[in-house]
Structures are given as structure tokens and as C-alpha cells.
Image 1 (cartoon, rainbow, N blue to C red):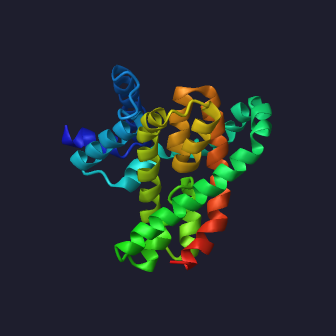
Image 2 (image 1 turned 90 degrees about the vertical axis):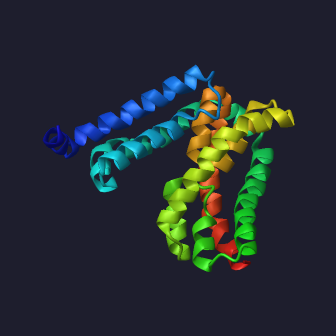
Amino acid sequence: MTEIWSYLAQQPLLWLTATLAAFLIGMALFRAAGQSPFANPSLIAMGLLAVLLAVTGTPFATYFEGAQFVHFLLGPATVCLALPLYDNLPKVRQAALPLLAALLVGAVTGIVAVLAIGKAFGLAPAILASMAPKSATAAVAIGVSEQLGGSPTLTAMMVMMTGLTGAMVATPLLNLLGIRDWRARGFAVGVAAHGFGTARAFQVHPTAGAFAGLGMGLNAMMTAILAPILLRLF
């Protein structure tokens, strides 16, 4: 069995299959939990894959060689967010000014809050630079972090933690606050929790998903502009 596993572990198809299987298990548990935001299928899938890699002693590079096709699909999937946004274009035009105001407040709050907390705990400048773009989507956040002298690895982890946390707490928090407008709910989640939040928004309501995609894209651009400026203040 050890020899068989050693052979299979080197095959890219194994890790692609494991990734898809882990996500399907996550989706099954998500449905079994009544679509509770705390049973996030992505979080479950990551946990299962982490355990599998640890138990089998498989390096991440070996895993990624097989799973990189899923990584490649992130690009087309992001572009596809334009379709529901186009369907909701009249709603976007009606709420253009409130959306811009919410974008500015959300982007500034996301950056300033993490920098203020980090500064209060005496974190090094490089760590602050790594944390500043944590609310932007990963591709943008990592690029901004590198330009600011941060650690791309730490930034990627912060982006993931921000997205997962936002996806889990957004629905109960917005319900508690009594916010019923799907445009506002979706846009807020997209600005605060990028791709994970957008995926969660689509699970809740199509309009929320469309506005979450808009928030994710606009916040990526806003973060790239504001992060270097606000970082100088800390």
C-alpha cells in the first residue's frame, strides 16, 4: 500500500480529485447544517485537505501541481461576476452615490482598523504592510503588500482569514442590525470579505451576490490606492 500511495501521490489528478471531493463533502455538510454560515464549505474543504496533506506528509508544492487547475479557474470565475452585475445594472445606477460613499467608508475602515490594532500591539512595519490590504481580493492584496514591503505569505493568510470570517458572520450580523436591502447587504459583504463573502452572498440572494461582486472589485481598486497612503500615517 505504501508503494501504491507513493505512486499515486505524484499524480496531479489525485490532488485535483481530492480537492473536488473535499469541497463536495463541505457542501454536503453545509446543506445538512441548514446552510448555516458557520458550516462554510470552503473552510471545511480546507480543513479536510490540510489534514490529508499532514497525514500523508505531502508537500504543498506537490498538492498544488495537481490542484492548480482550480486555481486557474479563479480568473474566469471572477470575470463571470460581470454577468449578474449587468443584469442588475439599473439598480446599480439608482444607488450609485450611496455605493460610492459606502465604498470609501468601508475601504478606509478596513485598512485603518487593522493598522490601528497592529500598531497598538507594537507590530513591526513589515507586518503592518502585510495586513493593510487584507480586505482586498488575494491577487490585488498580495501585489499591494509586495509594493509596501510586506510579506505576501502573511498577506495571503490574512486575506483568507478575513474572507472566511466575513462569510460566516455577515448574515447573522446583518440580520441582527435589521438590514433587509439586498443591495446594501451584498455590497457590504463584498467590500469587507471579497471572494468568500461574494460566494456567501450568492448563496443568500442573487441581487446580494451581484452587488457583492461589485463591492469586491471596487474595493480592490480602492485598497490599492488608499493602503500606501494610510500606511504612512502609522
